[in-house]
Image (cartoon, rainbow, N blue to C red):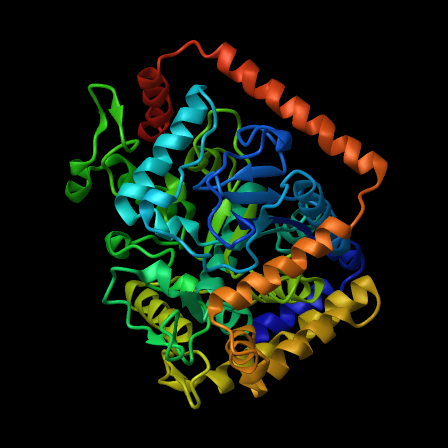
Length: 529
C-alpha cells in the first residue's frame, strides 16, 4: 500500500466518515434485447403498455426498438437498487406476452442490419434528434454493433462527504473544482486498472456466428465443428474489443482527463469539426437527416469510453455544457457485461466490489496521464479482452512487463483496507467477502464468468445461442412468477400513463423547426469557452 493511500484511509477512519460512506449513491442502467420465443430479435414496436420510451424515467430503449434499457433512481442502498431493477423487469414481463429479454451482452440470432429496427420516440424535436442520432450510428458503425447490451453503473459520493474532504484538505480552490479534480483522478486511475474489471466480470467470450456473417477478419475461432459459435479460447469480454463498442475513427481522438477543460475541449472539437469519411451521409441537406452532423462525434454520447464524467443536464442542455457549468457530479462505469448467471445480470457482491474498486481509484494517488501511458492502457485493455485467461499472461507497466496474476493480486491486496473501511461503516463483512470472491478468480481462472460460459457450453454440448437462450428462458420464468405488490403495480401503471401524456405535451409545445432546434442545441458548444 502506498503512503498516499494509507494516509487517505487514515483520514476516512476519522469520526463521522462512516455515516458518509454509508451514503454512497448508486444507480444502474441495464440493457437487454427483446426477443421472440424462438430467440430472434423482436420486430414489434416498443410496447405502448410500457409507456413512452422518450419520457419514462425507468423503462426506455437504446439504439433499437428491441434494445430495452432499464434505469434505477439514485439510491444509497444496494439491495433496494436491485429490488427496484427486479420490479422493472417483473412489470415489463407482465406486458411482453410471449416475448423475452435476452440474458447476455452479445446478441441473439440476427439477420444483418436490415433486421434491426431503429428506436422510435415520437414527433417532438428532441425525439427526432434521438432517432437521427441513431441513424448516424448505424451508418458509421453498422446497426449490428448497436445490438450489444451492457450494464452501466453510476457512482457518486454525497455532497456532505465532499464538503468534509475539502475542509480536511484546507479548502483548496473552490469546492466545485475540488470535487471535479478528485473525480478526474478517479477516472485516470480507472483507466489504469479497468483491465481488472474486464478479467473479473467479462462474460462474453463467444458469439453466435450470425453476428459475424459476411465478416472474415474477426480473428475468432469456431467453438466446435458446427461453426454456429465463434469464440476466443482465452477471451473475457468481446463486447469491449474490436467486435463491440469500438471505433477505428475514434482511436485518433486524444481525450485527456488531466483537467475538465482538456476533456471538454477534446470532445467539443470532435463534435464541431467535420470528419471527411462521414460526409457521405446526409446531415440535413434538402431535409434529409441521416445523421446529426458530419463530425467525428455527432454528440458526446458517441464517444466510446469505459467510464464517463457526468452531470444531470437541464432541459435542452448539452452534457458538456452541464459539466462546464457545474463540474462533475458522478461517474458512469460502462464496461460491465450482462452476466447470464444472475437474474438481473449483476448482483450485490459485484456492486460491493465495484464500490471498493472505485473508492480505491479515488483515494490512490493519480498523477497526470500522457499519450504514452494512454497507449499502454489501451494495449492492456485489449490484451485482457482477447486473452485475459491465458496462462502466464503478462501486461505492460511503466516499470516493465508483469503477469496479470501478480498485478491483480497487488491491486486487490491494496483494496483490503477499503473493503474493511466499508464493512466497518455498514457492519458485517460483505465487502471483504466480495473482495475475497474476486481474489479467488485471480487464483483460479475457471471461476471467472467468461470461463464458466465456455465450460457450460462444453458440459451441456450447447452452442452460445442455445446456452444464452436457456438462461433467457430461465430468467423469464423467474420474473413472470415474481409477483409485484399492488402498490408497485399501480405505480408503474401510473407512470405509463404519465409518460405518454408527457410525450404528447412535448409534441404539442414545440415552437421551433427541427433545423432551428438543432442550431440552438449545437450553438451551446460554440459558447463553452
